[in-house]
Image (cartoon, one colour):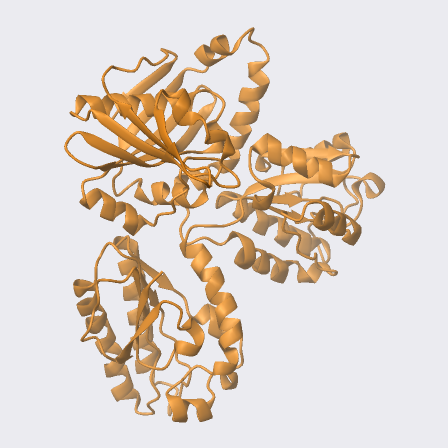
Length: 530
């Protein structure tokens, strides 16, 4: 990705030279448009005159506005927050510089809240890991204008890689939790419901803080599951009767409480939730269990569990930063647990019916097909970043990309799904690129794994084709681009009646279809085009 960096100091040791172009120091005279994104990486200059320094910092807002006005507003623009790496105060009441920094950072945060392409990065998250004296190496600063010490470059690059992942809306999906000596202190089968250490004084207090923190993960869209060697009846009793229990059955999307080996249980959990093993993080206090999973399921992330309960909260922070932080959380993310629990009810209910059609009729499915807009655009971009299994091309797009497509005349639709068990939210999207007045290209077609198995993908696609035909399009072109995970979609276009006109050596397929007739859609889908 080609990037242009606006800077007022030397920052090449940290961001590197690969596909990077840099402005001159404090130079905004050139704002290129032939790049894929922009970075604004200004740092607080060295100036012991606080009045002058505060005025200079105040000017950054105007400079940033000028650059944003000239830059391509369809391309990501990442702004680092200001951090004072060399604070000098002659009096305790001198807050001019601190106020100027705070004002700039607040302004950038407000920009990010209103402009989809602007993302702000809290640089202090990196700098506060170090003693103040370690942040500046005066030799390098005086010789090369490198204010942040180059000795921190390796650490910065690791941190920046995590930030890039968060900005791309990529993270692990599922946290798998052991119970004894992991969610509480002690062994439930030996200590009893009231004997486990949870709540009260230390160490029980540490486990209470830990459970409350994990609950916030669940509220922010991380799937919580249980994988524990225990008697299920004992666990149910603890969930129901231990007054200090924060995490209860309703907070877990799936559970495996049995005496089966944990590798098998993890495979079953992944299958039940229809997610990849590489989407999972496994937490267990037992080093033997952790090593077994590392050896037999290398796709699963297995961090070391802390030895002492007082280390749980630092461990939680590390979990969030390494696996679960994301730039923004959608309403679909927040409803994940309810959606997966509703899926479990659907599967159980399916067994009551003699055939699939009877079951599908019983669901009372409602499908809302909605054009992309400012409200659903973040979710649409997020799906392109996260969806792997039912994804015909696996193109990854940012919010700014999607907006650019819309401005260029593309049609982008998303699909909301509801049934009598609950609301699955926005779970599918299609990107349609006009080729000419009568031809359209399906750039992307993807569907969340949560709603697979009910023919919704076919109903969605056929409805979209009917809409295109009504709008005068008479020809469709599409591609299937194979990946390690999307093999189940290899014949989707064939099943939909498209003709494969060529196949590449890598397995990619190219399709065409004449849009002559209206597609019939089963009447157990109640479809609305909004």
